[in-house]
Length: 149
Image 1 (cartoon, rainbow, N blue to C red):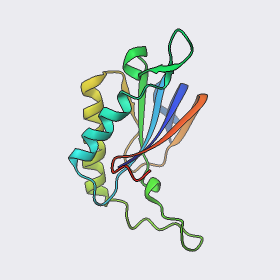
Image 2 (cartoon, rainbow, N blue to C red; image 1 turned 60 degrees about the horizontal axis):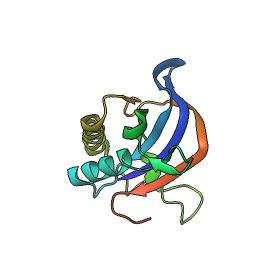
Image 3 (tube, one colour; image 1 turned 90 degrees about the vertical axis):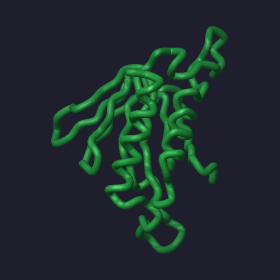
Image 4 (cartoon, rainbow, N blue to C red; image 1 turned 120 degrees about the horizontal axis):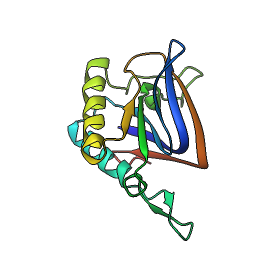
């Protein structure tokens, strides 16, 4: 399971030109599910993300988590995080999980985050979405549940 985590001042997602979810200060998570991922990956990644110390404390050091600042969380499914661009010009998505498996694990990740904070919003699985954000910092992190990077 892979996540792109961005610290944001605000973020929203629109589907067919209608805003469906939005948050203020918090984190935007683009989440990709791979073929080999399991519920353990969802739990591990959720725990990691909500406890990342990426918000400034009183001394302006990144020392606080989303839980500490009581910010919002917006989770967007994004299978393209498993796009392999090493050969040719067209990404291969063969390592991305099939839709049924991906949806189950995406929903498990969201529920696991919900155990930590009720301030969670989502996009819509398998929909074309437009994501709007104001990146704060900018702070952007790449996380892989298998610690590949």
